[in-house]
Image (cartoon, rainbow, N blue to C red; front, side, top):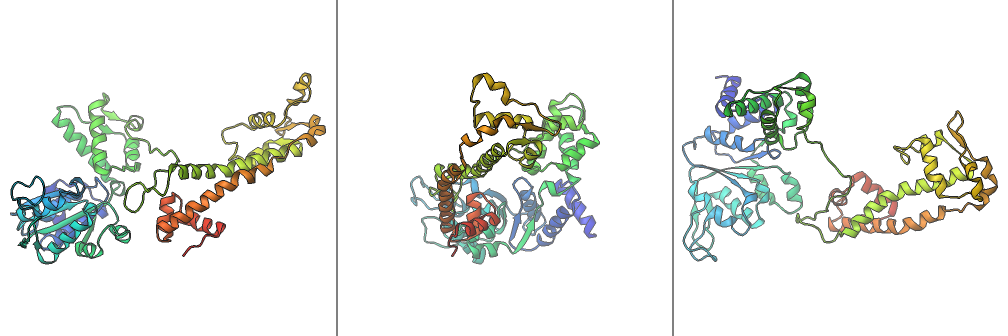
Length: 438
C-alpha cells in the first residue's frame, strides 16, 4: 500500500477530515512510530485533536489488543495524582481503606495517554521518569517495587522547554518523553479543512436531529477560513451546531455567520501578573498596576498640555496643527477640539464681550483670536506641572522594572512578560533609567 493510500485509509478509519500538509505530516509520523514502543510527545493547542493521535498510535501498534486509557493530568488534584497513577496500599493515607491499583498497573501491556503532561507535580514527574526508564514504580505507602510494561504517549498545549527553564518541568523527563515529537496544527493553520469540518459537523448534527443541513455562501466560507478559532475544532463544532439548529434560512451568508463568530475582545488594560509558580505574584500589587496605567497615560497628557500652551501663546489654532497631533484629538473635529480646550484655560475679561471669543473659522480652518493678544501675558504657564506630575510615575515604573528583573533572575524575556511589555521596550526602559541589568 502506498503512503497516500495508507494515509487515506487511516483518515477514513478514524474519521479524520482534511488534507492540510501539516496535518498529513503529523499523521504520517504517527503511522510510522505506531508499530514501535517509543515514547511520543504530542504538541498542539487545546482542542486541536491531540487525543485522536494517541488513539491512532495505540490502534496501529502491537499493543492494540491491550488496554488504552486517557488521563487528563490537570484534572486530578495534586494530593491524589500519585495514588491514581501508581496505586496505594491500605492505610497509606486517610481514606485508604483498601489496596488500590493505579493506572500504570491496570494498563499493563497497553498504552497510557497523559494529556496536559505539564500539569504534573515535580514529585510525580520523578516517579514517571522511573517508569519510563526501567518500567518500575512504587505504590503510595508501600516499599515494594512493581513492574509494568506500558507505552506512554504524552500531550501538552504549552512549551515544555519554557517550563523547564522556569523550573516547573524536569529537563530529564522532557528529553525522555520527547523521543518522537508530533506537532498537531491549530485549526487556523489548516486552510480549506475548516470549511470541510464545518460541513461535516453541520451534516452530522442535522441528520441526528432530522433537520435539513445548512450550506455556506462563498463569502461566508471565506470568512470562516479567516477566523482564528482560538478554541480550534471544539469551537468550530459548537458554532456549526448552533447555526444548524437556530437559523431558519438554510443558506448561510457572511452576514448571518458574523452573528456566531465571537469578536476578539481586549480591554487594553494590563492583566493580572503571574509569578513563576503560576499564581498571582504578591510582589506586584494593584497599586503597581494602577501606576503602570497612569504612566502610560502621562505622555499623552504631557503632550496635550504643551500643545494647548503653545497654541495659546502662538495666537492661533489651525486645522493643520490638530492634524499633526491627531493622536490627542482622535474622534474630535478640528473646530470641536478648539472649543474643548480653549475655554478651560482662560476666561473672557468682561462677560458682555463673551461673544468676541468665538471668532469665525476662515477658509483654511484657522480660528483667529487676535482680540486676545493683550491677554497673553495673563496666561499661566503650566508646563512645569508636567515634570512634577510625572516624577513619581517615572520612579514607580523604574521600581517595577527593577523588581521584575530581580524576580526573574535578570532574564529580560520573562521580566517583560510579567510587566506586560515587549522585550524591546523593556531594553529601552533599562537604558532610559540606567537600571543595573546583571
